[in-house]
Length: 430
Image (cartoon, rainbow, N blue to C red; front, side, top):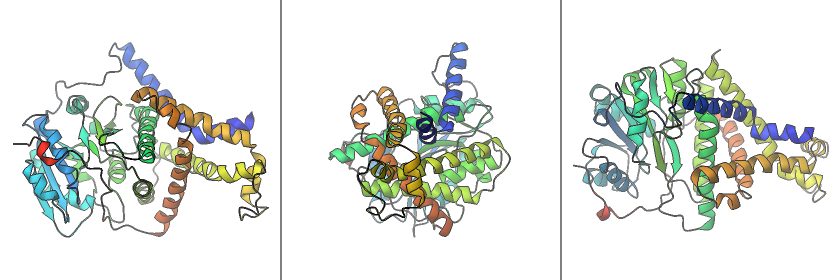
């Protein structure tokens, strides 16, 4: 039983327990105030939609950008859409203009962060607008995105609103494996945002580690304080968030029912690995760039990193340990040292404890995802998801070593996209 509890804590994590508890307390407090769990709506002092600049940095996104801009037209004619085409060699800029966006073309490719900096400068966004919404070219906002998200800015201490990511299931992946990957990503979103981020965004915690760049909002007055295009980083959103904490610019708001946006996730293993590796590398590079400070955010981050590394090690060693413990394979069969760490690990943790310590908490995440998303099929998919977690653990550790010994230029390449509806089917902005 003790072994099972040890594995359970390593895989599920103290962080989950802490932040899920804080999130639950937020729900209870809201109900006690008779506000229920409905997020803050537009209220006095909150910016309005016409005070928001929507900025998309795009590189060869002709497959999806027209559909995304057209979806924004459904909010009305008071939306302000800007596109910076960063070294695109396809019709990204042409399609964006045809749908009513104001477009800036850059050549050569500067990378997403560099493109954002140039667009903010050229379009004079900080001078003209109160809020900047960073939007990916494949992302669609839900109908109440602005209504729920902008209300958070009524609190003057809030300088950023982290959008809640949800998977865009249409167009549907043509393969079963692709649908499985997309479902797994949706489960990751739900687990991280309900069990972690909601608690981390509590007023007296304010330790949200990322304001995701796919669909999040910043007060434009803090943009000059943030080093958006810091050198040597693969991605910009982790660094922008860390800058908010490091410079004490204000509070980051998040609610699972506010500022929801749908994004197209990879449906091939190659694209999945490439995207997750990029995110992981950007995280470790950002951690390396910012020195530790004796503040709540860095203490919470340190605990998260410690558990992330421990759980990754457990997950990576899970398969060889089970094979060795059950006698299916020997250390020599696996090409391992009989006196090495894997042998000690396999001997110390019985296979049943290993399996139950991983499978039970992991399947509970699938149950949560099935309930939240109202997709009972996740209960069947849940028996396969632990293998994707092992892949994630491998990618996490590989990215750590890459971050230690290499630097990034910031150049980027968009993942493969599933084609949206044809351009002739879309409304346009005017």
